[in-house]
Length: 71
View 1 (spheres, rainbow, N blue to C red):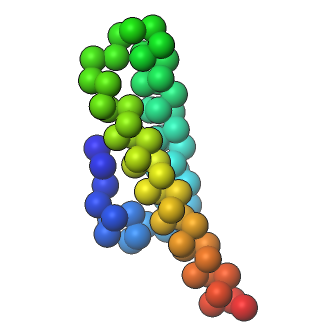
View 2: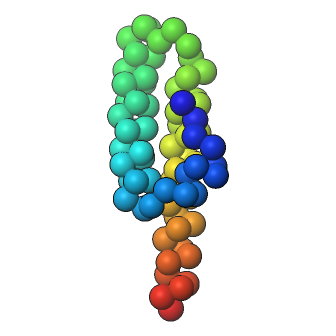
């Protein structure tokens, strides 16, 4: 399920990393289902990829903000 951007931004970098790993596993599983022609909802794969991109974007924002604060 997609998390709201507000929820993602309230997570720590470690929590985002854990969520990223979960999404990567889901994407891999969905890709295997697609390749073996067992994927029922083809749009689900695209949704998970977008969720992963959101997590990576927020994580990058947090790292950039931390670097600017420390510098």
